[in-house]
Length: 203
Length: 191
Image 1 (cartoon, chains in turn red, brown):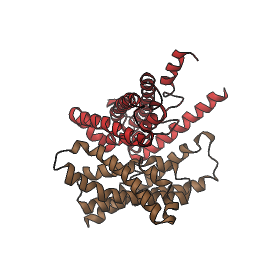
Image 2 (cartoon, chains in turn purple, blue):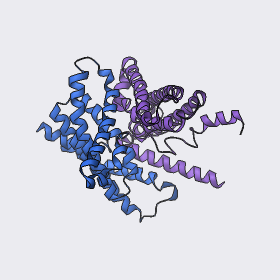
Image 3 (tube, helix red, strand yellow):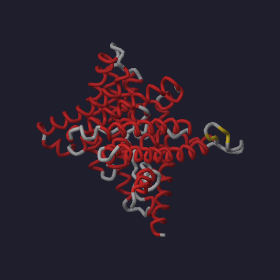
């Protein structure tokens, strides 16, 4: 595998093959909680893209300075700093979104995707590759979130990003916006994506 | 009476797992055996109660008077991480039996979003000290309840004929959805 191809792979693997949500089943809490509307899912995705990429840059830069025993604690402090920035920014410029997402923006700190990528990738690789990896993973997260929230908002409210897509003949499936709908949608999507992946492997 | 309402609402109506979606990772990971579900639930309840005892004074006596609310996230996560470490050391020194039962679950709790989520929600709801502690115990027991019910169902599921691609997380999530539907029925308990 030549140099360029492996750079490309660093980015692409997060989108489907190692998708953090659908394949690795990491970061389930925000995936379930904020996908009741596409708008919330978008805000969450942008926040995660920012936090993951920024932390990956910092941690891959200082990876040789951090002693092994305290590395997890140092990662958490770096991540928490960026999460605080994202949280304050949202609260100042998009108060409605900040309110709708509630404690889930601060909870990005304990999102296993971020800590997992720091430990598995950014702490071992250079800045450029870490950025590619972080972008790939966070876009994978965003894809899963958009997929889920689209299903839930269209079925549950007949709208997509607050635009009407289903006519007035449509009876809203209220349950899709409520908590049970999150579990049912994610269960179905995980099942279907596994089905496709095993089919692809056999082919 | 208010305390009772807070307790019941954290336990059943706003169950942390089934309606706030906090602590989903251990909910999916540790719910395949009843005995480990009980241990994990107890460990979470324990740490959550101590978190309530510690984080309330930090926020209301240190951060709020000096207008340092923006340090909330950093300070809470550091406090929780070191707290879990201390609890683990303390239990190892004092009781061999409890350590054997809870030991491996304690480090996992640091990254359990239910704990940090609980601390943040308690601040958002502006609870008093006593209310925060009651809320912590209720939320912890609610987590245990969801975990134990799920483990009971999953032990039976082992004998069921589940489609290949739904095995594991897929069917667990679908079952959790039905469970969440059932828990919505509790919403009528309190007006």
